[in-house]
Length: 440
Picture (cartoon, rainbow, N blue to C red):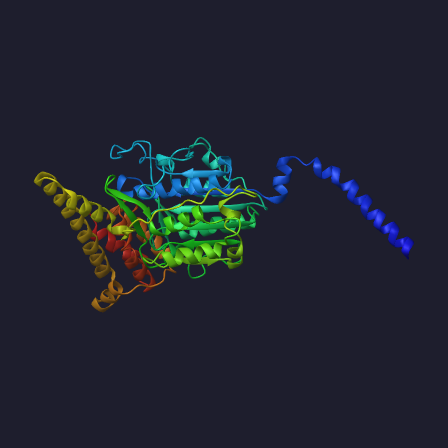
């Protein structure tokens, strides 16, 4: 028996010796394939100076990922890029994400900008469809395989089942379909999504995001509430960040990401975001992993934690941002001419708000069976399940009534179309009501 044992030990050692030279001959590419690489997709889905905060958030996210070792070649960014060199920017070429903060724009490689920032490009990049973005932007896509981890950060406006892009909207069902098809095609080992938008929970809630496709998502808000802007800057006269976004990023700037778990970061952000309900969805086992698995690369050198002096959050609901900016400017106005110009703009916004409310009420009344139904629909909130009715209704509302990708206030009222659909009002009836009320 001893002889047999000696032979088997020698045989094992022989195998060890034999196998090691082959390991050394593995190319870096093959090694990466075996252990997996880290990819990231960062999107700011808005444009315009009053939406400064979205691109500031996106640039800050880029700096965190790059600072924690994800190579620039593995980070893909989409942002309109009309902020850094905007004529309203008092510091041309510089974007900050908190009062007195560092420049987060420097060194950011933007792959898709201006009119290339669309839902179609986003879904193609995420799924690695190079053909679909041939000749668009840099044409770079996520070329992930079965052992790779993907981190997605999206920042913008939202509504039930919708994330806004500068000129269009991404629908929840299209995002979930893309995730499912990537899972089937073994395009990733695990994926983590951080979504900053009003009603962002509605992209994943009520079982929309399966819990068995290796995706963990957190959102700035539940399915029924606004997310909040923060850090008003008197010099730039706009908000520099969004509460949920700055909370997770300031946490990542200060923590050791090789030991902090996603669940710990989620809990910190949930506690500190006291303006809306930060939510989590999908595969909870992923949340036990360290943040560095998604916001960094293996064996990254830990950057020096940033000491952040306390600054006032000054949070406002996303849809109130244009009004809040003008109110801040009015308070700081130095002459009657300035005051009267600002008051005119404030009046125009308030009139637009009234028009949104009035038109939506008219649509509901026109489409409802009777006054009781109309009153109920205007006063309650149903969960969105009837996408086949809701999606075309939203499309027509966008076309005929208000450009929703540019009107966050109108987005806040789309839940009334959800209610009509959930009360089984025929989509044809809703469409006819929209066409009748918004005929201009």
